[in-house]
Length: 175
Picture (tube, rainbow, N blue to C red):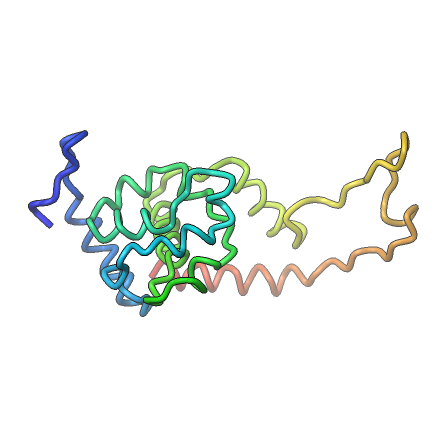
């Protein structure tokens, strides 16, 4: 890894982050990014690629070249909609989405800020069990709720159980 340099910015990969990334990749039994031969199948099927500049194959390539820190600072890291199409389409079973998840975990573990919109979703899920609050919809000029539409009320999940399972999962990921 010592010989790789981004010549446009004269930046070299951080050896510590590369080592941490590689350790976590092997600990999680992810298919190693070096198996990727950049066929672009993951990117061609990516739902987020159609709306943003995210390119799953580029995440894999930059990760295997060691530019983990750059990826952790990228806003595109949070653009993945987690549709798993890249994982399904990869002929080498590399699963770019798993690498993106890993980079997200490393970013959060490093204490970096996550996007505000994502924080709101996380807070809503832990508070209510839903990604957003129950909303009214507009029918003509009037805003109506589920009851007025004749829909059944939503069942609120058991949040105590959910929160304990979530916290255990988060603790296991950090270790």
